[in-house]
Amino acid sequence: MDDSWTAAPPSDGPVALRGWYELSERTFARPAAPAEIPVEKARAELLLVAGGDDAMWPSLPFAERLAERRRSAGAAVRLITHHCAGHRPRLPGKGPATPSPRFRYGGTPEADALLGAAAWCPTSLRRSAAARAGSASAPVRESWAPPPGSGALGAPGTAARPSPGG
Image (cartoon, rainbow, N blue to C red; front, top):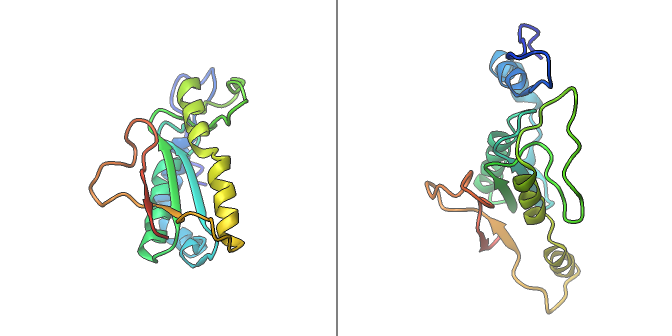
């Protein structure tokens, strides 16, 4: 991490660390590249969940890059986003996250709940497990790959629309 970073005012309350990650990424771009996880080589299906208002780190741009690497390799990826969600999506049945006295996480309780609900899909998980087990009744697997330039990523609500394939 780049130690030259200082938190933006006001410094008397919770701090957003996203700027530190962004500065460090720019400062250490060259040495960081060899440390990238080769997600395009993974045989598992990949689910990425990211909030566009994440104040802890740039989760949406990072998730978009990972998804693009997977799509370029022809690998299955599902990217679920909400432009107003922060760092802590809330799964169904969970209440709003407790505010932190130290860190700002971004997002709104409503957007965090919407993102969590979009990411939590027990029916799809069961179908995916059935497909891996070779069930004859298993549906076509879903891959989240909106057309280039569609503006789907980062749009209100969940950003990507499912399309057959993968």
